[in-house]
Length: 272
Image (cartoon, rainbow, N blue to C red; front, side):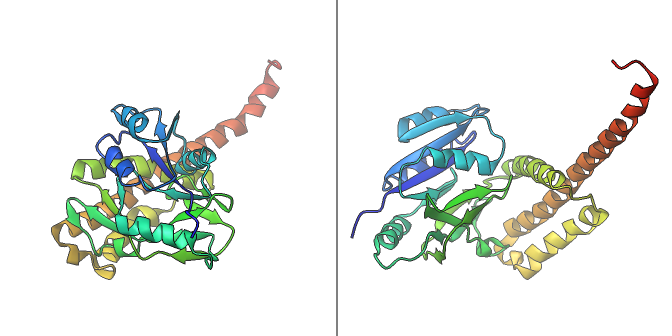
């Protein structure tokens, strides 16, 4: 079987605690590419330069654009997107190489299960059991879209791998709260960009619904106290996103009102 050429793509900001282990776990790949956010304030860039095959520094605008920029640097036939806090296991690496070298493979992309470790605990429920993103695809067949929670627009069929990526995410509450702040800002901007109006139901009802869905329907209670914390803070995230969306929607209305008065003012004065 021909050896598959896989380019591993990683986007990173302030990931000095995670990046080295992530890169070492992907040494099986044809090449490893890291795009470092220009605002990183730790040793992320130094680690990338020491461990990766290609490194670029870029000002972050959104996740899809950042990942597409990394893909533009790749030369492999396939690209495999990995976050800095994720680990490719030997079993997953072997399955990827075997699947891509299979002459009977008809898929242009593959979904990869995610095994999450949250707040120091191995999670099996709380909605994490549903994580099956499209992470591996032919470089000429897809690209990322979306400002946050980006997805792959793929031209072709999709298969599913059996082995999982290990996701060591949200090690403590402080990190969780910081991530809520960052992600809700991007999510609110995306809602505003699409022109979606603010709804009171998103502020009052949706946070409770998110908690109930994750804790009861997705059985977060089976993940112990950490499961309760995760589900509760996920509800908080929905609340914060709605607050930020309301602010952006209000700013948009203010701008429209101001611009609507401007022609009248100009018509009464000089044509400056």
